[in-house]
Amino acid sequence: MGTNINRWPARLDAAQSLSGFGLVLFIWAHMFFESSILLGKNAMLWVTRMFEGAHLLEQPYPALVSLAAGLVLALLAAHALLALRKFPANYRQYRDLNQHVRALGHLDTTAWYIQVITGFALFFLASAHLLVVLLQPDNIGPYASSDRIWTGRFWLLYAPLLLIVHLHAGIGIYRLCLKWGPFPAQRLGLWRGRIKLAVCCIVAFYLCLGTASLITYMRIGAEHAPYAGERYVPEAEQ
Image (cartoon, rainbow, N blue to C red; front, side, top):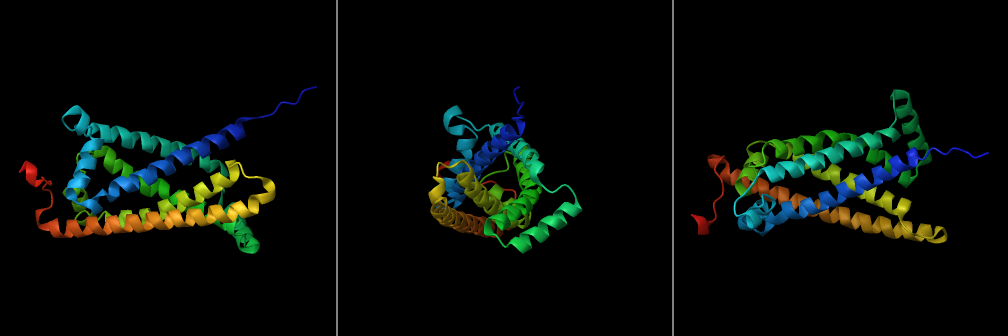
């Protein structure tokens, strides 16, 4: 007599891993594009126009940015719903989990708990950022972004988002490597240390890159504050 095996938990777990991996790749690529401001206003404007399709379609279409933001927001929502299956469901479970984490003192368990907390915060912080991009796709550029960050006080959102998103992404990649990586069981302890070191270096790199970019946007925004709302026009186009 055969045994019926419910494969849906495994399928949902795989979907959560895939959606999380996709979001991490997006975050890391997004940070590189955002950091184009470090190369100058013209470089950041070139990247902005690239995402608006101006280099291929001869004129910018901000709706393309809205489309991309909508897709990422949908992926974020799907990933959050899949992850909620593993979250504590009530106060008693949270209390028991806190006691377990403190008593166990295991680094990977603590990292998972941090991922739960940062994931909860990201659902609100990242969604707020994506909604702004979705609804105001034409409000992106060297001056437009800087004005939003400084004059609009969005640095209060982006500063904690920068730290939380990279902590969550780093822990997520670390857990995915251990869970799905082709590492032999007898050498998993060695690989665990190597993966942990690599992830720490990657997180530190992106935190430094993101901090430098945010500070640059804030500096440009502060300098441009008396003219907030004006758009950047390269000298060649003036």
